[in-house]
Structure formats: structure tokens, C-alpha cells
Image (cartoon, each protein chain N blue to C red):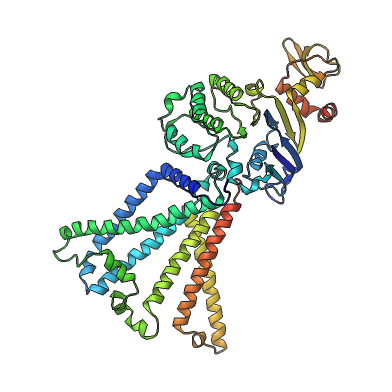
Amino acid sequence: MLQVKNLTFAYRKSAQPIFNNFSLSLEPGRVCGLLGRNGAGKSTLMYLMTGLLAPNMGSVQFAGDDMRKRLPQQLSEIFIVPEEFELPAVTLRKYVEINAPFYPRFSQEDMNRYLEVFEMSNLLDANLKNMSMGQKKKAFMSFAFATNTRVLLMDEPTNGLDIPSKSQFRKIVATGMSDDKVMVLSTHQVRDVDSILDHVLIIDNNRTLLDASIGEISQKLKFEISNSLEGALYYQPTINGNFVVKPNTDNVETNVDIEMLFNTVLTAPAVIAQIFAK
Amino acid sequence: MNNIFSISRFTLLLKKDIAENIRLYAIGAASLLFGLATLMVLFTPMMSLPEEGGQFFATFPIYNIFVFGVCIAASLMFAPMRTKQGRISLFTLPATSTEKYLEQVFVHIICFAVMFVCCVILAEGIRMVVAPLLWEPGATGGAYAVDRYINHFSFKPGGVSAMVFANLEAVGITLNLLMAVFAAGAFCSVGIFSLGAALWPKYSFIKTYVATYAVQIVLGIGALIVSGITEAMDFDPFGVIDTRGFLISLAVALSVIAVVTFVASYITFVKKQVIH
């Protein structure tokens, strides 16, 4: 659906490239977690995917067209929720009225449903300027989901949300997902989204360290509390013993802990690459 | 889907712009009206000067205010690009860059010009009511009635300007030519400020003004050097090109600069990225 091909990008020509000959493919039907250390280039990758930045070499293509052209046909199918955003000083109702016509698959019914889940239905006539940061984020995310674009990119979507809103957010992602869409959630708050991800993408130092579905990860790695560190790729002490990540040699399916997975991948990238090599 | 230009998307952009900035535009229009009305009331005594000359001196500042105002409006063309968040919203909005650019030109230049004319007409109405209260009866001297106003800048012979520029016409400089130079100058200024807006969305007016001033200084120094050289060579360029020819060249040059700066501002806008 969205393809990053041999992409090279640096903010300045003299600077070290953030991406060098980087490739990636986003397939529909996925809720993909985009993970990486600070400065790994997660936000930059999202900007490149939406045509907000131009690659030095290579391309980002959506439905066969280069995203750099910023064609309405592409832009009406891709929505980005950046970590920080600006909303105009109009009511939420007016905001929807003036922005929805740009998105052919926008659904007012979905918008109302998402606002209801976020407990924001009573704020339709409130001015966005007077809303709290969390309320603004929920209003903006409701609109983003309601556009029903085929690609939805969210940078730190749970930042600024209170505890109930985080579970409301997970509910919306789960109900708003369909086979023809792909959602990319870039976050450091992995615990907020680990139950809704079905694919994980970990990038670091200009490389894709892991690009695998949760099913595949659970097939190839084992996450368990154990006193034995034998064969452990990564471990973390807990009050019940060590939480260990090991290669899943005995085909026992365990729940994937995204935070542990992330640390494992960064600690032993070569072994992980070997395990996940097709 | 039309990926070049769509009237319906252009209209949507316009509606969105007006809905989001209606208060700002209303405050701008009210301030302009207040400023023009104040100025025109204060200029009222000039209207009782010998009619044509008085009106000319009262009218000329209005032209300058128009040029100044439209340059400020042009420098605000890309105000949404001042912040990273604003750039993200603008660039990811599903419309072509051409539609977004032309919408900004339409609102900030064409609508401003129309609004300016409306404000002048309204300000004249205010002057006609207020001036008799401040000055002696009859001192209002006559209205800036629109037809006279247009006549003033028109190319009709025997009008206000015919008298003012009579001596110039004798040497072949027609009012039409001077008006063409003025129009090209205004067009060129707007083009320069629209380019400045695309290059520096933050503090655009000040930065463009300073840059333009710097270019003028460089050109001035260049002109001095050239005149020194031509003088040393005992060559008089005005022997080759007369004043009329110079003004025609100036009008053409200003028009070319205007077109080039508008094209450059469009290209700069299209190539703009979210982070620089």
C-alpha cells in the first residue's frame, strides 16, 4: 500500500543521514507499532511518508505515486496526527464542517461514535481554543479516525491522554480498524498500545531491526518469568524472578511484551536478525 | 480525481480560510476603515485648495497606503507556515499546491484590493458626515466621489492629472505612462513581498523590507559606479535613452520582476518542507 524505497534522507547535506538506502512496506490490515530510540527517525519517517519532507534519494510511494507530489488523491487517503498540532479557534462542529469535505470517506456517524466513546459529545459546540490539551487531542483523533483514510499515522497518540482516555483510545483503534486500512502508531508509551498492535516495526541507526507480526514474534520468541538465564537474549529482574526473553525453541506460545521485545532487539540485534531471517 | 486544479476544492479552501480567520479579517478591515477615515477627515482642508491640485495631494497618500497595505497583506500570505504544526496542517490538506497558493493570493491580494476600495468609499461617506462638524461649512471641498477618484487615476485627458502633468506631457511623458509605472511598481512590490512570505513566513514583512532595502543600496552603489564610469568615458546614457524611453523600460522591468517574483514565490511554496 505505502512503500518506502531505497530512501536516503539527511536534514542537512553535510549531516549524517538519518536514513540511508532504507526500505519498508506497509501492508493493509495492520495496526503497526513504530518503535525506536529517541532520534531514531520515527517522526522523520512519518513526515517522509506523508510528503512533508523530500528524500535526498529514493522515494515514498502511495498507490504508485510519489508522495512528494502531495496530490489531493494521496492526501485524502493519508492522515497524520502529529505529536503536537494546532487547531483553529472555531467550534468542533465548525471544524468538522470545514474539513470533512476534503476527505471523501469521512463519516459523520463514525465521528459521533468516536466522540461518544471519548465522552466528548457534549463539546461539539465548544470552541477548540478553549479546550484542554487532552480534549483537543481526543477531538482531533476522533476526526482523524472518522476520515477513514487508508493510512493513519499517529505520533505519540497517548501523550496527554488521561487513564480512561487511553483505554477509550484502544477501543476506538480496535473498532475503527478494517482490512483495507493501515495504522502506524509511533510511541514510547508501549504499554498504552501493546494490546492493539498486530505488527511491530523497530528502527535504529538507519536500519529496520525488526519488522514482524505479533504472531510471528510469539512463534519465534518466548517471554516468561524464569530463574534460569540460560539462552536468554534479554532479562529484567522482577519481584517474582527474572523476566526473560528467549528464542522459542519448544514452540510454547507466550504473550508478547513489547517493552521487553524492544529492549531485546536493541540489545541483541544480530541474533534477532538471525532468528527472524526468512 | 483532478490533481491539478479543482474549483470545488478551491472553494472549500476559501470557506475554511474565512471560517478560521473571520475575526482577524474583520479586525483588519475595521482598522483599515478607521485609519482611512481619520486620514481623509484630516486631509479635508486640502480639498478646498484649487480643486485639482488639492485632490491630487490628498489622493496620493491613499495610493501609498494601498501599496503599503497590500504589501503587508501579501507578506501574511503564508502565515500558517510560521510554525511546524501549521505547515503540517497546510501541506497535508488534500488540495493541490496550486489551489492552496492561488487561494492565498486571492484572499490576501485580490480580496484586499476590493476591501480597500470598499473602505475608501465608506471612509469618504464618514468624511462627508464628520468633516462639516470639524471644519468650516464648505471646507469639505468636494467628495472623493468614486467617479472623480477613478478619473484622477484614469487616462482621460483634461482631468486632474492632465494639469499636474501638463509639463511632463510636453516632453512625451503621458499620464498613461506614469500610471503604468505606478501600477507596475505596485505589482512588483506585491510580488516581492509574496516571495518574502514564502521564504520567511515568520516576521516576513520586516525581513522582506530589510532585504529589499539592502538590494536597493547595492543597486544604488552599482548605479553610482556606473555613472562614474560613464562620466569618465564622457558618455551620457540619457543621450541614448530619453526620459520617456527610461520610464517605458522601467515599467517593463518592474512588470517582469513582478512576474518572476510571483513565480518564485509559487515554486518556493511548492518546495517548502515541514522542517528546514
